Length: 213
Ligand SMILES: CSCCC(=O)C(=O)COP(=O)(O)O
Ligand SMILES: [Zn+2]
Image 1 (cartoon, rainbow, N blue to C red):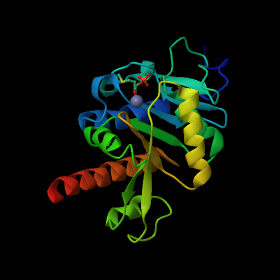
Image 2: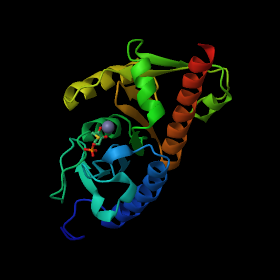
Image 3: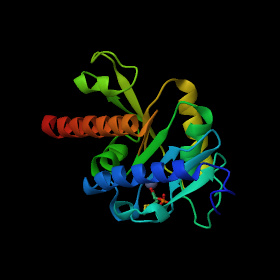
Image 4: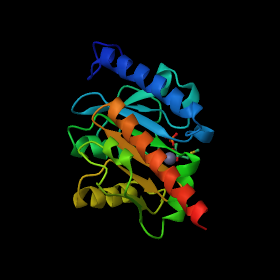
């Protein structure tokens, strides 16, 4: 598809793709995207998102590894297969016009915590100065529950569970049991801040559990 035929802004796609590539390289270097896991997207416009192609090594992304989907998760102008978890991205863009970026990683801490707290269904985060990192939180006295959903390969079923969480109140992320973390924000910078904050706070909770044993 050439730029004239495309139903989206191809120049903006390249800018977003380069932004995803640069940010994901850092996340991969941190060890948060093992074995081709994880997926990443940014809102392109009010009907389309730029998202990683399924199965690619996320530490070595090039422009060919970023494609366009509509908010039903269907590929637009590409023969590549979008991320297997595309629906978990597009449901956020469809529902929240302010969401600009969705990041999904499989760090060691995220995966261990999702297993430890899967039965409880949440990780309770309280008493941390870093809770101020979440948009809308003015004070460290804020408490936050990071939900943990059961894992399934049935993406529409998983997306339906997420809808239930979103109905319950404001949220910037959730864990999936034995799988990893989803975090999002209005921009790449905000989504990165939320992702980093969740990773740091989850790591603190895991260390406290070990030290208190
Ligand atoms: C090898 S990881 C299993 C799939 C997964 O959880 C993931 O995040 C990557 O899937 P994608 O289709 O986006 O590459
Ligand atoms: Zn995953």
